Structures are given as C-alpha cells and as structure tokens.
Image (cartoon, rainbow, N blue to C red; front, top):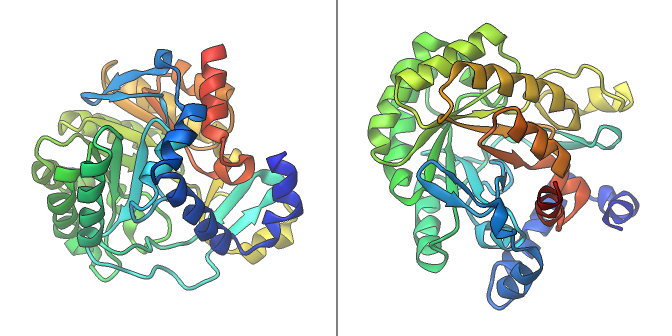
Length: 340
C-alpha cells in the first residue's frame, strides 16, 4: 500500500519538504497517548533483544544518523519499533548546511543523494533536548553522531569535536565521530590514520565513560579500512559504524540525466548494499569478536539485516528505505527477524 502511495503522491513533493512533514507526524506519534498506542503494534519481540556497548537494545535494528538531525523525533521513532536512534550529525556550532536543493530521490534505484552539509541547531540546543528526553524516555537507546563545524578549519577539527563531545557525551548512550561525510569540505581527509589517531584519542578522553565509535566511508580502500579498524581497537574505542554514504555513482538504473542533475553529494540506499557488506567483512576481520560493529548501508529488509548479523554485525541501522517503505518499516523488519 505505502509504495503505491509513495509513487502516486509523496514522490511528487520536494524531498526535504516531505522529510519535514514526515518528521512532524513522527513527533506527534512520540507524544502520549499516541506513543503507547503505536508501541502496541510495533514493539519488538523480546527475543530480539541485544546486549552491546554495555546497553540493552530491544532490537538489533535502529535508525541511522541523518534522519533526526536535531534529536526531535526520538520518541516517535522508538514508538515505531526502532531499537535505537542515532541522532545528528550535530556540530558544536549551529549551521544552516548547504544551499537548497540538497536532497534528491533516485526512485528506480530506491536511493537518495544528499549534500545537506550537517544542517543542525548545534550542540547546546541538542543537549537541552536530550536532557528533556532523558527525563521523559530514559530507556530509549540514543546514540549521538558528532561532526566538524563548517566554520572551523580542518587543522582545528580536534578541538571542535572535543567541544561537542564534552557537551553531549553525558547525555548520550554512545557517541559516534563522523569523519566520513562527503558534504563538508576536507572532512574525509581526517580518516587518514596519522590524522585520525590524535583526534580519536582526544574525543575518547572527552567522552569519558560514554562508549565512543567512529563512522567510516565506503569509498576507502580495504587496506585503509583495515588500518582504521585496528586503530580503533588500539585507541580503546567501543566500536565502528560501517558505512556512511558513497560518492560513487556506479551501476545506477536511474536516467543518467537525472543523476547528473542531482549533482554532488553522498549516495545512500539500495546501490550501497554490496559495498557496505564488503566493508563490514573487512572491519570484522580486523577487530576482536566482542568489538561492536554497527552495519549500515543499503539495508531494506529483514533478510538484509540478517545477512549483516551473519557477517558479524553487532547492530544494524537503516534510513533511506524508510522513505520508500513507509512508517511501519521497522515493524516489518523486526517481525521478519523473529520469523527467521
């Protein structure tokens, strides 16, 4: 039903407008008594519970960073059945992001191109919302994804990340360092091991007892991925998130003119599936068995989630397929996982 509605109606709306409209509905679903009523239909089966990062996740399947940039829809997303919500990317300094239009659908590929540019209201505003959330929904697992503020030079990135970590780590169940978005100039250069090591060390110290993870790009070479994974273990991180969006446009079915019109940005969705799975296997081969690996990229179905878990993922995240499969996507996946 929803795919037909999407193609007939929702796909006609500007993607960013549609996102904000959807978020408004999700926020309503997060308010009592709507959350209680929704949860009766969507609550994950207790058999799906996962223990990781010193936390208890009601399902291995969660919402990836990028959907809820300002920590405003966590209650609603949890009510829809997501086992955790990673908010952000949040920067120390509030920023508008890149000029619009900056979000594009590639419908034949069930994919999205975005060059949002870390649009968010900043760490202080996020901290206030997270503090309220902690009082009202203390059991919801919330990860916080942090990135570099655009106005900060790459050479000063460490201090900028530390500022965000210091403000947000006490309110987060885990903290994720985003050095892999293609939409902030110079950011991906921070993935070089010689640059990444001191950055992670400083953020780890600022995060204190909050588990720290790093999110990596799928466009790295396998040797680079292996090196980052080993670095994460050596520096005492709690895990790795694999992967962010890709700058590749290989193998797309969408009309090349439409792809070209969308322009630069990170590609997410179904076309990322195979590379994200490959990266997961490289990471898992380089880290201890008890090291947390969160798999994300091209996840659409319960079978996809099960495949990631079988390949060594501790947890799995999705985002883009939510746009194509509708509000009960997490419920469908959770029920499919129980069936498997």
